Amino acid sequence: MSVYRVITILLFIAILTIFSGSCGRQINFSSPPGYDLNHPITIYLPTELNEISGIIYYQKDTSIFAISDASGSLYKIFPAKNTLFQKWKFGSNHDYEDLQRVDSTFYILSSSGNIVSVKFSKHAPMLVTEFKIHDKEKNEFETLYFDSALHKLILVCKDCEEDKKNTVSTRAFDISSNTYTKGPYTINVNTIDSLMKLKKIKFKPSAAAINPLTHELFILASVNKMLVIADTNGKVKQSYLLRPSIYKQPEGIAFTPSGTLLISNESDKTGSADILVIKHKNQAE
Image (cartoon, rainbow, N blue to C red; front, side, top):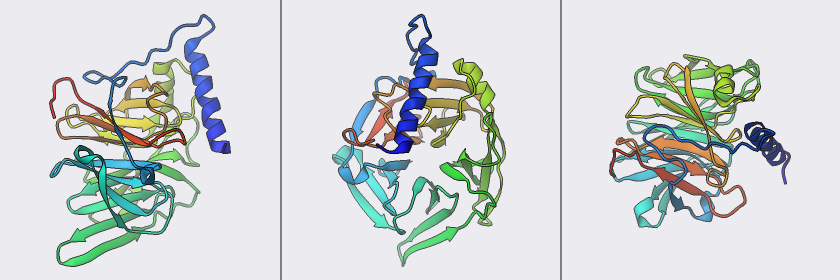
């Protein structure tokens, strides 16, 4: 068992202990308004996607695009066809963490913060370009989402040297100029601590997406087994503890236009990787 896996288990045990308390109080696995996180529909994935990380929904044919942590391939999954998938090789085996699509271009985030753009054309080969972040510090990122109001990709730190225990910083990538800048906000972890009645957690985001119904930012944290909801300025509004038997290693999050929530789980060496489908109570797919 890896050191990272041991640390993750110990961290979650500590969280459970705090929530349970000495009186044996039961943990409350509640859900955001309109969703039931505890009863998702499960789409099981083939072994090749055991390390699935980022996902996005493709409305045109109701498919899901995904990346797998170290494969350097872009996958297209068809949930209605027994997870039949296509794939395109865009790079070497590297630590890829998240992806987004803007128009005809895919943007794929590596853990270093570098972004690979992949563009398809009917009349030319797949065009692959890498943009390097040039951070002075050694930082780690797993989260990339597109803010259409800013017309920028937002990177959320998982572990950045500038952050203390009570902050999580961001970066922005301007898709017009292909340049990085300081992010539009910093997340105040003290608010999460207060909502969850915890003491000084190290918040480590693994994915994020903007809900098209509420325009809120849903931030997934695999290590913390949490779903945090904030506004698009990063102000935390609510936080929910995820049931570990369902969300064994949640690394990707996306929405359909009608508000259905999609969360991808790595296999975590226990069974298959999967995609969890949580429909909004007022929506029908």
